[in-house]
Image (tube, rainbow, N blue to C red; front, top):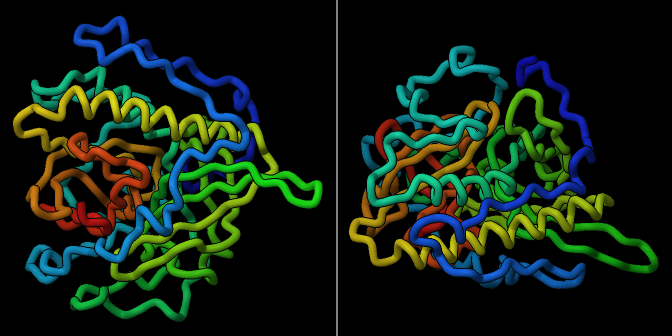
Length: 336
């Protein structure tokens, strides 16, 4: 069954079964013996994304957008495709994608342990979602601020990352709120958010996916090209599970950061996305310029809003969000 014909269905199967994390103590060069804590229902995982992670000092690298490389930057898309051959794309990097269920990195620099990279990708994949928007806001600008680069008209589809999962309680009613970050050119404003669906666990064609409807936008910035919106659910098992997934990802990153922080040329960049709306794929590359938020890795329509993971970045609460991809260089909406 193709991604185009597949009707996502909400399934709680295996939601209560949390896969065991790989043992890191048995590997050579282990990274400590810290025990992973679990969160109580009321414990918050992350700081307020509005105040601490999306500050006004972050913005798109406008100089990059003004170069001749900005010929086909937008990495959002409008149509589904079950394979790369079904969707017109002039990028020649499709063979660089690694299917999420077939993690193997033959081109990984010798500096890095492949098991370490597989571990962090395995944690990040659980937080990546496919985003489908079925409405285009009339307030969308014509171009990205300060450039001649066309702003996508929409409705757009892309990728996002779960950054927060919290239990709520009021007047005898319990529910969960899940915050998801993506690019603003994927979900522009409240009118689009009301027609937005997030699809979790779309790892392969046989995945039991879960659909979440967006309720409202929490934060949005065109200059930063990012948006944080909220999905509400009564599935409290899912809320707690996602909260633990967030912590697991942060825990693994902290270990890897300490292990590789003094390695020369530590410029590894990873991305997990839904190119052309397909199942999750991993892109692996490197920094294009250490002084900018640019990098070189495979990206296509549908990758917009995907989390960009840098091993040399200490804090990973929200991560960078993939914004625009050219044929040679890509750029995120948050400058590191």
